[in-house]
Amino acid sequence: MEPTHILNWRRLTPRVTTSGQPSEAELAELAAMGVTRIINLGPHHNTGALEDEAGTVDALGMVYDYIPVEFEAPKEGDYDRFKAVMEENVGEMIHVHCIYNARVSAFFFRYAREWDDLSVAAASHNMESIWRPGDDWADFTGLKIAKGQPNRYKGKDY
Image (cartoon, rainbow, N blue to C red; front, top):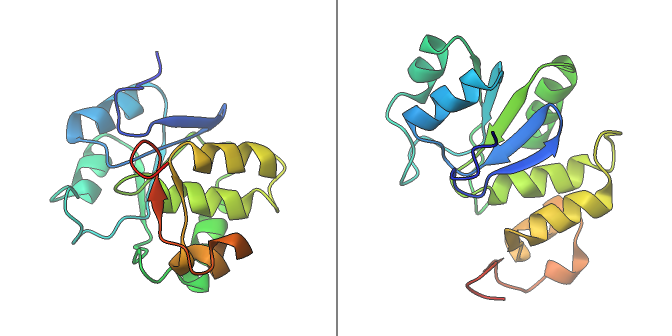
């Protein structure tokens, strides 16, 4: 069973899933379905972040990677850390989340250019099903059309 009730849940590949912030109970569901590693791109100071996600993930027997990406200023170093964790854990069941799945979908849109497991077209479709990045993500994603545009969210702005 796919936990589609988790905010913006997506399955990208047989071994990689993404979402917005899961609750503690939802993290337990992810562990029960075989996820061994959680990558969190959402800073702990964001509204909706769990108080002790690292402790919860550890108690569930999963590994926790925390790469806090400030939404208004995604950095190359953030992407480099994300890419390194993905490449060091090939074959593991990985769940990547942030608060809404906006950061994550943009990271995978960019990563799809280098990753054989996901096409750029599929990554673009996934991202578009959640949001359309604006100016603060234009350089990061390589989307020139985003320059000067606001961030827009599926069901709200388009």
